[in-house]
Image (tube, rainbow, N blue to C red; front, side, top):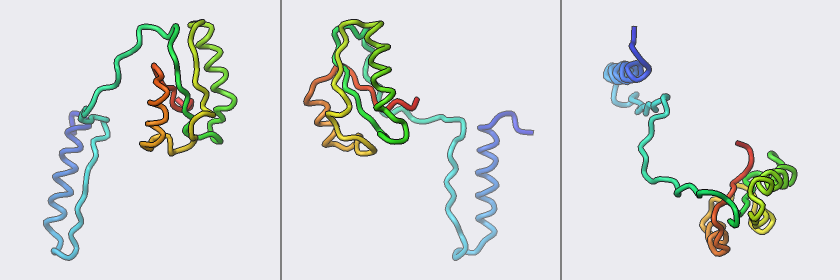
Length: 125
């Protein structure tokens, strides 16, 4: 019996490797095993947390304007944040492109040009 998932993955890799040895060169398949425990190399850190949102400018980006209906939820998010941080300000999502292109360099540059203190991306979390 395996002691944990990581050992299981190692064993599965050994099994897949030994199976590859029994096939001919024409039949070989390269397998990539991913670690299901979620371990990932950290290549960069997130931005530092803001101490609070009073007086801060928040840009809103809508990743999927249909599926997640940000036209309904973003105003509610704004309302809740304004109750807690009365001087918070927003750059509405309508001022930026919507959809999967929010991760494109041109959209990132548009957001950066407005100099927000933070960005709310989507609302499905």
